[in-house]
Length: 504
Picture 1 (cartoon, one colour):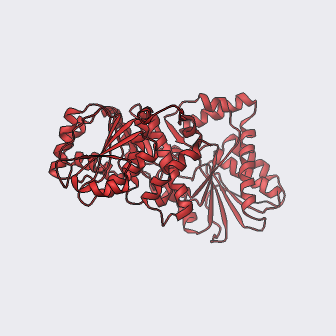
Picture 2: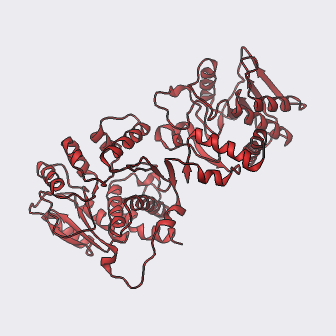
Picture 3: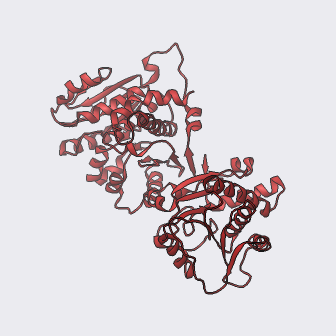
């Protein structure tokens, strides 16, 4: 599914009006009907509902919602902020006139001083102050109103976008001046800013309301941001031919493990095997042979010359893909081995966990990463590589820059894992749950990515598929174990089930 900027959505709005031969007011009425229906399914007419409407089209939506609720037996208290003479948008003005003409409506138009109504935890507030049309941070009396609503403990429903939050980038915004919604009713599309962890407190629950925007226009409108869902994964997965052998599904070498870290190698190998790689080889220190042979007997083991750490990475076969990092630690021997590997190996590879930490300890190695490679950092690993960042938004912006600069794919792991391609395209994952924040989860993901690349998927499709399937496996496992009881082996063991679920 495409994720559009606010400017692109405005273009789609305009194209919808033309294609469907409707007016802006017609589209606004459609949105208000969807919002009103959602509110009526959640609360009875006896519920106290207080609506705050701004002077633009977001306010027009809110006023139309107030009118529909009033017609359905609700009794909303409505406050319209029209602090400048003739400042209302045309649609807001029309909906203001329609609402004012209704008998028995509690309607206050604020033009100067304002005494806010008393609010408490029993009330519902509908935030229609400012939506996606906001072009500058809130200021003046609006900041006081936002802070008053946030402090009220009322249940807050924001229309389209919480007031004060921009649809894309919010670096530098005063977070005190953004509505903290309990429920955001997004019109047709989620916004990019909804996927950043630091904005979760403003979004609350998000529900997308379909208002029948023009599909051909949506399809034709370009974007750099996409949400990966089940249908996307299904369209990419290949079915298996009955007349095939293991080498038809690729060979993967995983460099993993060290003394006390055999588990990382086991999890990566198991992820690769469950994801369908034809033959998986693990290069690991000698001390890990016994535990790996017992845990993953289907895997070929390749002994490092060192008993305890990876000290030399020799590629003796033409593997389809090489992955480095799970549990290898950051000893001098291992850092030297990775440096030598980059001098001799120039095909795309997968770099995870300690491979990234080794590179961070010798930043010059970044320039030697083979073009086309895949890096899978979590937040701390990314910051070790590319300096400290204060938010997911900042990391994404930096990842877009370095991905293009070094011609690498970066997988920013998190609740909404974001895959950044060298061409600037960003793919946001929709599967997964909080239970996957557990040791070894990233090792499994490395194995799944390796398996997909080994099977001949392009780097883009391999990573997209692996991230989605990894998250879905976690969702399947959580149904059995719950999020609190979920551990990395549960994710690995459900990769096959996730593939089966996608291919239904």
